[in-house]
Length: 84
Image 1 (spheres, helix red, strand yellow):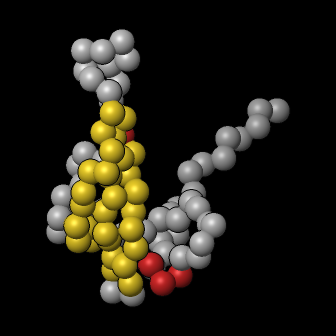
Image 2 (cartoon, helix red, strand yellow):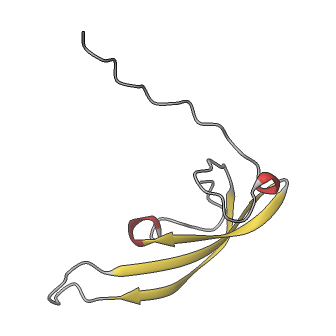
């Protein structure tokens, strides 16, 4: 008898004030207040064409604000007043 593959779980959304240090795997809907690129390494024509990018964004909802660190592909599309 074939085993059924587990389906995707429905996301459980969390508010910023419910976050605790050392936890992970949360799903949030927040607004980007400010973003700055803190590190960008690599050259597109170098031996390793992939660039490393790290951006820090101040994001929040009606319950609070946090600093979100985005890496590589996540770092580029963050714009002020955007909801993520």
